[in-house]
Length: 91
Image (cartoon, rainbow, N blue to C red; front, side, top):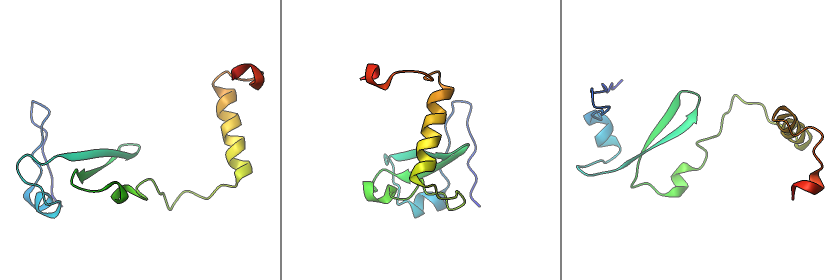
């Protein structure tokens, strides 16, 4: 498994194996995308937006019904202090 070391300037050198796989040359840009707590994905900037499809998919997360989603949204609103707010006054 390739390993990169962080320099004192906060820079890393991408290992040759990864540069070759991502088709990176001098001056190439990479995107660093957060995909979870403490997890990131590095993608060559030469990719298209379609390449991002599905990166947030988590096969271990159980599916939710619309009712469960609405309940989670309501719980989040209540936790943020919106309890008792009149929705008509918010708009």
